[in-house]
Structure formats: structure tokens, C-alpha cells
Image (spheres, rainbow, N blue to C red):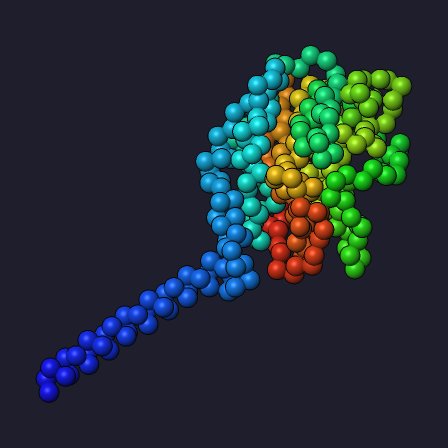
Length: 292
């Protein structure tokens, strides 16, 4: 009788063990495939591999191998891996907010416009060597007609979603022609220049980028000479930028910043591969102090 009871206990223990194994396997499958919605697990793997060590990548930047420095390709790729999380701040400091531009490289008042890439994106840096005469008023602005990659219908239920974001702002590019040279006959700032526009969220453009453009404009009015660089950051072959790196330094070193702005919009989710937006009421962006 005792032997029978022992055998039953062993069978019960083995049954419990295998039941536990099955439960664990099911839980692992459920998590890795999002409950079956991602059968191959590719999305989950992508989430883990695209996460980056913010402190390790953002705090240690090196200048590009150019006479004026700026964003290197290595750091470009590190920024491209940054994933925005709802509720996060709208921008991050890069390199402890210190520019990697070389302030002594300022020589001639001009803008170096990079060519569009093979996907017609402004995925390279535009670098401006600015002075006081480049500050522009709004009186000569014209309607924007260029449609950069990732551009779509501009409004959803009365909410403006997209802007044609200037890399080098209209307000600090007076006299600069399409070739990037200063021409006193050109009284307006940069406008319908395909090499200087990208699809940007209205929030990122109007509420965040303007903070740093105002700082550049203020310093120019103080007769400082400034190197200013803007680089839209694309991930892979996506047509809409994930964000934009802005950095500036004055020749006297008083103005100096280096930031990465996420290309996000409160209340919306972007498919960066196409640029299309979908309503997402859970998407929140931490407000920032918009004073210069």
C-alpha cells in the first residue's frame, strides 16, 4: 500500500513539474510575440536591439573629421537609435550640452548646404557661419511649397501636425543664396530650398527648435560670430527624421549648446518609415521652458 502511494506521489510530482514547464513556456511565448501579434518575435527583438545607453551615447561625442568639426557619423548613428518614450522631455543634451564645432574655424559668412541623399532626404548636416547681417525680419517670407520626404496632409481635426522644418532658420539666414553664399541683394532668409527642409512635427518646430534659434538670433544681434549646425537624424531608410541635432558655438565661446530634439507630436504617433501620423491620446511630451 505504501509503495502504491509513493508511486502516485511521484506521478503527481512529475505532472506538476511538466505543467509548470508548459506554463513557463507559454508565458515566454506570450511576452516575446506580444500575445501572438508578432509571431516571429521580430518587433520585440527590434525593441531591445534599438534601445541605447543614453548616458554612454549622448554624453561622449566626438567632432566630425572636418575643419569645423560638428556631428560625426558615429554619433549620428548613436542618436538614430534613441527611442522616444511617452512623457519624456522633448529634447536631450548631447555631449553635456557642449558643441563639437570648432569655433576658430569661422572664416567667411556662408552656409554649407549638404546635398540630398539617395532617398532625397536632408540626412546630412547643414553648417552656417553667421554674423549680425544674417538676422532676417518676417516681412519677406513667402508661401512654402517644397514637400520633403515623409510629408503628408497637414491637419487632423483642426490640429496642425506637420511643419516644413528649416535646418538653418529663415530668421538667421538673411542674404544667403541657394548656393550658400552671402549676397546683399538677397534680403530674405532661406525659404523654398529643398536642401534646407525636412518634415518636422509642428510641436518640435514651433515649441522646441525655436528656443535654440532664438538663442542664436540674440547672440547675432550682440554682434557675435557663430557657427551653427543642424542635422536631421534618420534611422535606416525611413523617410521621416526621428529627430534633429542642433549645435552652435560663438567664436568667443559665450554661446555654446548641443541638443537632440525628438521629432514627436503630443497626441499622435508617427510611422517614421512613411511619415504618416495616427491619433494616440497616450502620447505625451514633457513641456520645456521656451525662454531664450
